[in-house]
Image (cartoon, rainbow, N blue to C red; front, side, top):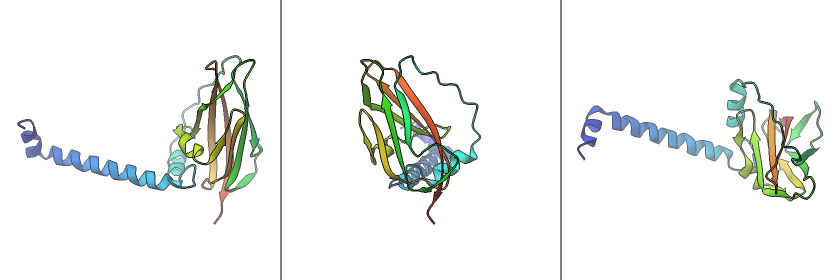
Length: 167
């Protein structure tokens, strides 16, 4: 109890408490904004766009790592209407098996983990992933998808999509 007296007297405890409450409130608001059908919220997209990206390290897959193929949307410069369908197919090499529970999906260069949001909307199998009507805010979006096989080799595929949300 004695150690609290100087803290209370200086007002530092109150300031720390106020900061903790503000941070908790901001976190709750961010969570509320991202719940629902969006894979990424407008606020997360704006934060990603406002922060300059550092140089990207090169990813070298392990020899024999799973191969990921983007089936939908087709790569290209087209602007797609949101919501969009996303479909990936993956293949393991040799006797290895794809481990669907190893799936990780990250958004943007900051690597925001959106795996749980995707899993809430997606069909994921040992053959691939399909999301129907994935809602994204208008703009350019970069996704990185990783999956491992039974030999712990990790395959990765990055893709970008330009989206125009419905008014």
